[in-house]
Image 1 (cartoon, rainbow, N blue to C red):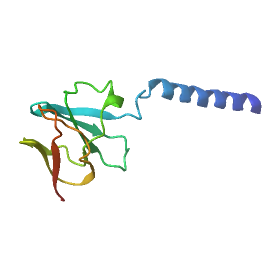
Image 2 (cartoon, rainbow, N blue to C red):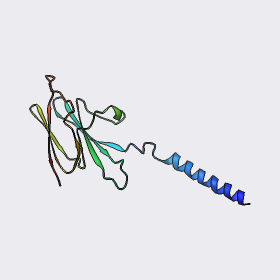
Image 3 (cartoon, helix red, strand yellow):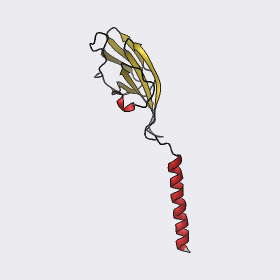
Image 4 (cartoon, helix red, strand yellow):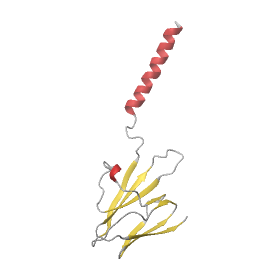
Length: 135
């Protein structure tokens, strides 16, 4: 009798785990959403991704990408370049000023790099500047 009860309980647990697996989000580890994608100047596009993979105790963060084309979906996320900025705000102002790209952000900056290569129409590299104001 005890063996039948243990088999019944074990079968119920296995069934519950199988149902949870079948109805869970298949892309649970990749919780990025395209917030916006827009052109800032000739040949330079900004794509902003919201990443909420951290769970309940880790805040959302925004990844800013500078590219020569507009991103319309995240199907090819692995082909994105490294983000130029990772911040806790999705409202950074990015503008072109001649041969410079200026990024103004009020909030926390987790990562910034100006090693991203963004070329102008003549093929020379644009400079990327960051102005960050902590909250």
